Image 1 (cartoon, one colour):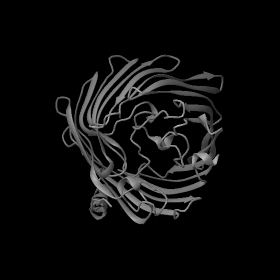
Image 2 (cartoon, helix red, strand yellow; image 1 turned 180 degrees about the horizontal axis):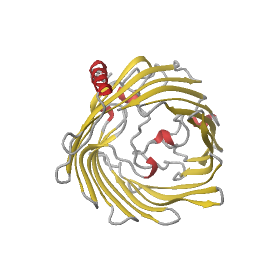
Image 3 (cartoon, rainbow, N blue to C red; image 1 turned 180 degrees about the vertical axis):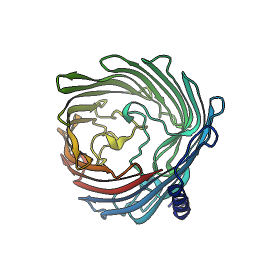
Image 4 (cartoon, one colour; image 1 turned 60 degrees about the vertical axis):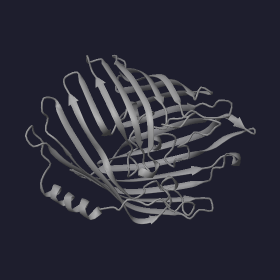
Amino acid sequence: MNKQKKSVPGLALLLASGLIGTPAYADQDTGKFFGDFRLRYEAVNQDNALSDADALTLRSRLGYKSPTWSGFSALIEVEDSTSLIDDFSVPPAGVKTGQYSVIADPEVTEIDQAFVQYSNSVVTAKLGRQVFTLDGHRFVGHVGWRQDRQTFDGVVVSAKPSETWTMTAAYINKRNRIFAEEADIDSEDIILNTAYQTKAGKLVGYGYLLEQEDNPGSELDTYGVSFTGATPVADTKILYDVEYATQDKAGVFDTDYIKLEGGVVNAGLTAKLGMEILGSDDGQTGFATPLATLHKFNGWSDQFLATPNAGLEDVYFKLAGSLAGGKWLAAYHDFSSDVALQGNSDLGDEINLQYTRGINKYFSAGIKYSTYSAGDTVFGKVDTDKLWLWAGAKF
């Protein structure tokens, strides 16, 4: 088992109490201190030989953003995740592998962000460890659902030469993933993204050229285009989201990605019907998005964090609204493979339910549940239920 870094929750809570007593402040002379805390219970029950998992974890972040001098500023943020109940496994971090179902929240204390920034009216450039996301997190995200979120070491430059154009270029030399330092990846990733805002929606073109350092055959090149927008019709807003991407793996495999989604907003309700296809190259490999916030897509039970070699087709329906000062969301997913495996293509289905509520400007809470029913046994999936309860505070 890899040795975990010692956590320091007592120090984090002591500093948090100081922040609570002294409101955050920001001006050109003093900069800004900030904090973000989340206490969460998570339970996982799976129909297999693993013991059911239970976790009670506290994630604490404390940071400071400097004042700005001639366009330059700096930020540093420390993150700590401590387990109060630790009956769970995190295989990539070497935590109780094979004993319990997985809850991917290892104990860790680390620098979450540390960067210098230059910004003017057109260009913003950041150098160092940073949170970096693009276009809804489908290809580049921070995985903020987990207690040890994902950040990147590198340089990110964004330019906004007009109200309609935004261009982003990044070079990433380390992926600081969600499993503590044991599973971080040295990389040579190039990220290119250009967006054009029209009256009907946002048109985006991108190229993501990913490669793990000193790992021949890890090259993953993705090129794509998307269009997302909304149009009012009487008292209803019509939503639409279409996307296509093609992917080359190590110059050997070719796969495709397709997303089609439509929706309506009316009388306080939002309904969406969509389909995502993460294609397969003849059952040998599936379309991959290794930098994404994967929990956000294809069901909250996290059955498809790695796309099956047979690919994945996800047909889903989502309904959301407001209740008692909070927000609720319900979703249904029907999964199948892009190509049949031994004549089978049923990858199961899943129901997701969530309710969140802000208590005031500082505190929030939520409850969330997912239940996954496995499909054809040839795919090796099992029935899975997950439950989360949490409370958070930001200052």
